[in-house]
Length: 266
Image (cartoon, rainbow, N blue to C red; front, side, top):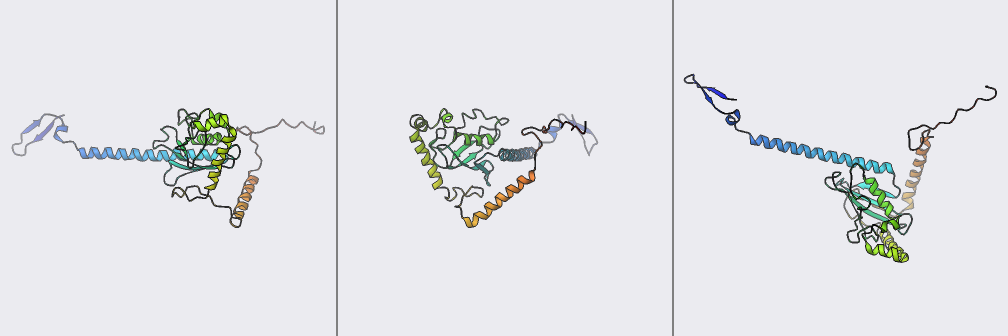
């Protein structure tokens, strides 16, 4: 394309060869501004998408109703979750163990999350130095379409009730060897871990986060009323549910063969 400009003095035309791009200089500032705007939009989209996916993960955890485990995302960052597990049987019975779940900045487009216990843990699949739970055997490759955080919580629960299978994937070789050779001594070490967790149950929060899970000693004058209210509410909700006419685990309604007609009706 050519640019043609008329002279105001002699009325003659003259032509400049070349494209308009050479006549009009490029606006680099405008291009940089557009690039920055696109980058900011992409970043905002990434944050909202990530928050939505983490919320979906939390809802799945809630729907699974995993007994004895409680988790909540940190108020400061949804990439950090606080958790606690109450162990009800086995070598770690009565243990109350706090843990953190750490999600990568690129979650869910990243490797599996990290799980680290907050106090010293003597367990075959928990690193004795970092207190990090080894997830390599349970999730060799993290697939965001197949694996979810509720499965990680299920695995945390599983390791305390399935010692024999846990030993096969040990990262704490001392704990694994002691379990194989002298289970009485292993149980004694496990009990030390349990006692430590209970002795420090009411410690001041390790982090100043409003969502950090804390405990208080039971005071009958304060907590009995709350306990009664919770039990009453649960019973009321159960009564409101009524009877289900749907086969559990499916959408198929329960039916029965027609009642045969009585002799008076036949």
